[in-house]
Image (cartoon, rainbow over all chains, first blue to last red; front, top):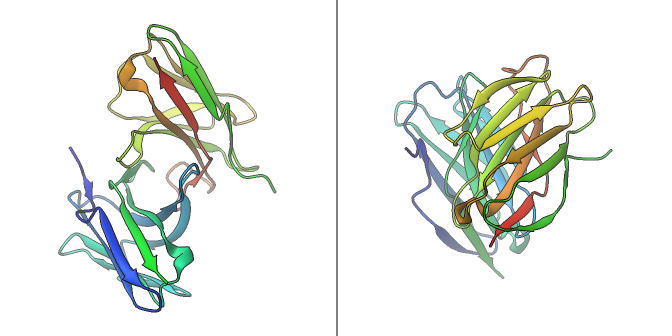
Length: 111
Length: 116
């Protein structure tokens, strides 16, 4: 039962343009959402998070949007840089502090 | 300041054997969680420990067990290994004043387990 879904396994974007990564969830009890970036042979690295009481959180080039009614969140990267190329995981936390991850989206930023 | 450390980094075991993976959380973090990541999938939650008590368990068989020590380090044990247990095992630690605190999880680099 996949409670967090990332329907796009891969995304290619030109350097300098916007990257938009999407994530959908099914459990309305999730109260905290996060994005992680993962390089090969490394553990996931925390990128940005958002509480369920907010609809937007921004940190430099990264912005996360949350649409609770649609159970959808997205990560915007502007401008995209080649170093952003990695696998991005969306995660959601339940009230028991357990994290559920999507299957990941592989982002390639083309120089 | 050291991050989450896991040992060993790589491990090869034979079917039916037992394995113990180790994790040291970030200093001051009391919550440790374990995840299994199979190739092409996202991390799947196995266990969460906080203050040496199990706080959550994912949908894994009883062959999987874990514990947390007084210094908040943790071990994950898997008995009677199957080929399907081959995966990257990730440990994550979280801070916060309680096990439900609104904080992110910081991951180690993982232990790559191969069962042959």
